[in-house]
Image (cartoon, rainbow, N blue to C red; front, side, top):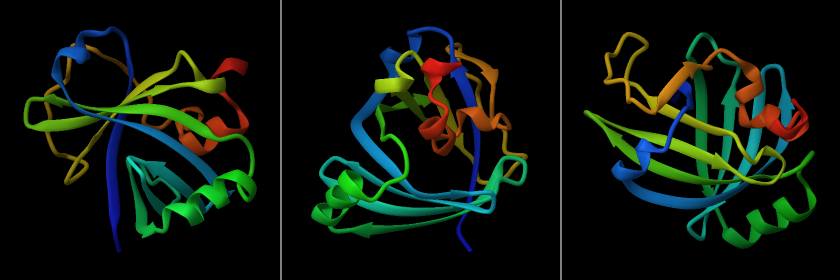
Length: 155
């Protein structure tokens, strides 16, 4: 089984911009979002992926990801997803030995900036960046699947 272990933090300033190593414009939508799992389609950099994620257990959850044809993904996003699309720019930002994913949301989630660091184990040590604020790993409001139905602009 594939396992995703990540910690998620709010971003409190723009000091991360000096350490960007890559950026991607992303659009994603959810086909299913139930207590045990979410199923999404994401398009970024003219590539598409189908992702299935299990229920979070602490900062870990099962994750299965597969490439799909770009045209199929665009048709799914245009007609089959439940709720609004998530639109964001993802910046990969180096801090110490890790590259963080920092998402700057657009649309109904504009104003929200969240950073995630993927880890090899729940106990793995990592350098905390000066631009990272409150940890929100366990706050389901910050899950992309939740932002579809309860966008940041409505908080």
